[in-house]
Image 1 (cartoon, rainbow, N blue to C red):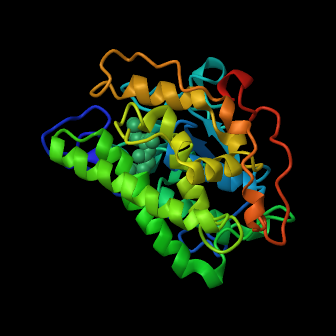
Image 2 (image 1 turned 180 degrees about the vertical axis):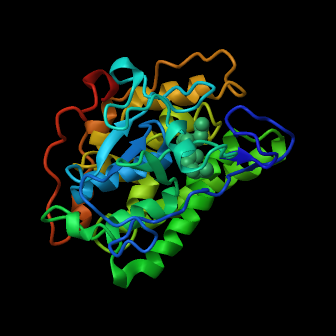
Length: 341
Ligand SMILES: N[C@@H](CCC(=O)N[C@@H](CS)C(=O)NCC(=O)O)C(=O)O
């Protein structure tokens, strides 16, 4: 992400509007390997921060599609230092598979003196240690449509052909006003810029709530990529966007429809079991020192409500279509109990 003066958006506060930079490395891993990166079990490593909403999309997709055995996972420390994402959660501060201490090393192997920012999610080629892509928008679509040979039995179709136009349309609005809208509000340096972004966030959330009052999921009657993308912002809403990013017209818990919708997803295997509220809160409140110079992390909100009944099954819907929910989270990838409701 960046402001349009090229700063990294987390700490740079020029007088210009927050603008997200385009992903720089946009190679695709495909079934036919047309960019030189064929889908192959065990070849790639997905590097994420569990704090990051863009990376969290790929965490959910990987679980729902059952790609854990084929696509290994590296989780970065939620707090970057001046060399960006680092593997300080691992023994000796090194990712055990890639053998690197900083994600930037994989970027450097791909392109030395790469001038852009180092971002997650990142897909890294294990044999060469080179970054393949950091294009988070395409990554999950490719996991859903190109990695099918490695999907688990019973994996859902997250991007069904017949519904793609509608899914794309919903995702475009969700991206502009919600996924990125909260960032534009949070990093605004002027009153007007903030008000426009914040108004847009809540206007869109109200429209989405109207839609979701009648149907369990955003498009069709099953979980799709559109739900994953809305989920990753909603699950962070009260914890960080409401306070830290000043999106505080109301809390998610005050909106009956959206609160039930996000709890429904949270309680669905593959969604909530990827969420680490501790990483989320510490990242936002400690890294964005421009908007929280004390780096103090608030104690709330109370998380106990996340596991309460949502009653959304009364709307019908078939979460996994003809498929089945994913199995339990593998050992080593479970979120510590202290970081969950
Ligand atoms: N790659 C995308 C989106 C991914 C993204 O913004 N990830 C954030 C974390 S939520 C990141 O890694 N930012 C770089 C940093 O904070 O050092 C972009 O360049 O805008």
